[in-house]
Length: 560
Ligand code: HAS
Ligand code: CU
Image (cartoon, rainbow, N blue to C red; front, top):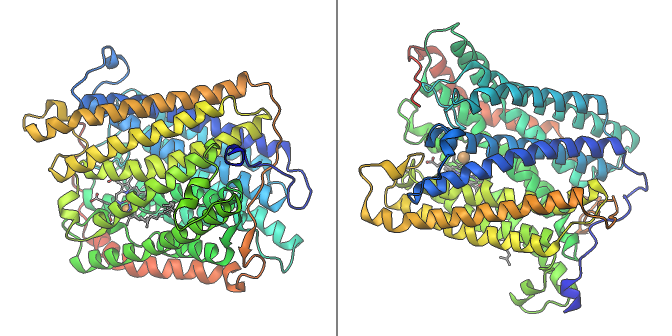
């Protein structure tokens, strides 16, 4: 019993004995603070929406949010764009530096990047908060926001490119200092995450620079919904892997050790990430199956490619579960399934991330439904989709990130987590809340209830929907309480905890394959070329056709 409750020490000496610099820690902490503030705003607005679905109107909410749609826009942008991006931009370089055992190539560039992203965020925040960018996180035209919203977000994206640059530069220096050695797994995976994102973000950059920014500044008079959506989803699908991969990096390179075991296979892990690098982008049409103006054949190609990108997640499923099993057996676990109980469930960081994995199995199955050309017609634009996205980005990613902060914040602060018990309560409350919340949304979606709608005021509200809607409110409240416990625990850790905590990060060793993964897995050029070729094949013809036929004559709308 004592073994089960024992906290596996997540911290130990760095691999090659060099202490990573203090400066990197501060940079990561700065990104984390912004991420956490965004998540706070995102969870508060989330509560308002969940309650609205349950028919409860919080008194006084009109002071901060002008409408349901204003709240949804704040909720989406703060959670999926700001919380994720700032967390990842702080966490991935941190892991790279720790796993390479060398400092960031340029800390100055790191801080410049941070302030550029803060500047962008500040510029975008003004219209967002003042209801001049109530266009939701997808900002589809002809909905039109104030130019500052688009310009600010673009600066944030440019900031992420500088993160890529700094990481690539760091990795190159390590290569020249360590000729012939395999890139350590965590560093390799962190680099893949940002390389993939940088390629993927080109669609969004084109949409911003050639369409939304000149249009919102009045330089061009009209816009086009279809071309904008194509460019948006060029980035909008792979962005979900930009959120997911950092959680995977933790599941592969940290959680096995936290669970008392080793990573099952190092080469298999690399193969999975290379597949993400190659396959993440050329499949955005699965968000546009119902859009007119894109040939069916291309939609089908994207549907097949979506099934292809399912595969690296299946590899991850296999590899991560095998690693967990290795840890659980080392802790005395027996049987085909019973070993699962022997995982260190008393460690909130592990509980959060294994809970996130379990949730993701269901989110992944939902993703298959979405990706199926014909079934998509049933679920598209219904409440099923927010049901799906709360299992994926809302739990697989967010709960994993929360689990990571349960060791990362103590590591950066040098003080132990304030309360493990509160953290465990938070994790289970999140899981229970999400089961109720997401299950209700999935079912409402199958009954045809639309997403992104102030459903409490809809004249077409049916009795069946009404029966389920309170569950959305109850689930949302549990999630809100869980989030507040999370913030309280972190705040107490930072400001009140007195118990010291070491500053090192312990990576999982691999059972097989470390340092003799195929050389091809440590090459970049072939995979990058393949990624571009696939993108050109999957998007080239449709983009070319749209570029020459798009009229740019739709006037902008401000609805709320
Ligand atoms: Fe998705 C819509 C298809 C994954 C997020 N998705 C969305 C939207 C968001 C989103 C935000 O094809 C809404 C966008 C909007 O506003 O319109 N999605 C997929 C597919 C996958 C998928 C095929 N989605 C994600 C991830 C997200 C995310 C990841 C965020 C992080 N999604 C779609 C489609 C749409 C869509 C359509 C458009 C719908 C429409 O009509 O609008 C796949 O990548 C999923 C693969 C996942 C798996 C699961 C692997 C499980 C693992 C855990 C294993 C460990 C365990 C431990 C279980 C195959 C790795 C347990 C231990 C044991 C002992 C068992
Ligand atoms: Cu997608």
